[in-house]
Length: 298
Length: 148
Image (cartoon, rainbow over all chains, first blue to last red; front, side):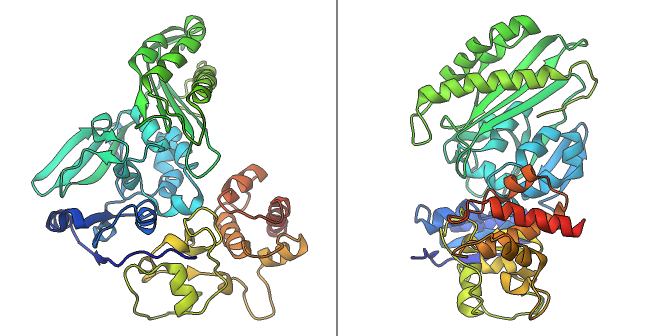
């Protein structure tokens, strides 16, 4: 028996300011509409109900991807597929292109946007998990102007983000990885959403033998994707020593994540997988350190 | 729509799948899971695959939509993918076939030399409960061979 969407209207603003005004006017009865892959599904299932969708795809330029001072600025409406195929992203942030290429399925990637993914606050988000380690800046625009928000502040909780009424995510600016940084991403997925994602970014010394700083995040297993300071501290040091601490680091990561028992697996199983993935990611990230190939990822 | 301009009034909440099936009577597009997981309803919009069940007809305005009805170049002549699916028995009940064909087309249009691993990964979002997938992958590889 087919499910039907309830009735709604669609507005077509031509500027972000107009979109923001409409959203404030509609209040609880209005919602931003971008790719629709999460929103329409939730509305169809009856979980969300809005009388008015504000289609921001009619605002020109919001899907632009451009290089900007050692970073790539990604318009909120860039689709996963556009990012997967972008020559700029592929050459400057290959790890990000690789993760985008494995989001959900090609149909979701063709319509779903990075901004929508982040704004929906879906805990099972590979892009959000990786971005936690890439430390982007989010530009948020509302009726009173724009502000910049770091991703951890933006992600408040499951399906909850730090947007005020009438505010919209405009762009995500992702710093490029330097010549001595390495990144890797691992995920486990049986159905449409990942069951576990693990992102690792290491800063290495000139010789590539010592980690001078580390960022590690896991997603899909906790209320929001998370980093762990305790795990990151254990990943700093000479390679052999760090290798000996990987189990300890994986446990710290799992401890800080509030692992959930759910239909995807038990917390114990997820803890085990975190250990496996951290080792794989570490070996991959440190595998080519003799070559000077900056920012190469899995 | 399959190369022909169509002008119709639609409701904002109308899905592309119901627009195709009920207004245009193009029933080759099948709806199965209805939650964009199974891929049976896959059609191409400007060459990219979408789940017509959860995609608004509104989004197809001023764009090129290709459904299975538009795949064959003419009456009596099949698209190479359709021929290959026949030759490899890449279908049984046929319910997933329209979506399989269009997903495969979108893959070969952008990555004609896709490896078997890439084919499997790309087709992963289209479910078939009859064939066990191997003939589907074989059919896609057959078309690659013909194109090469």
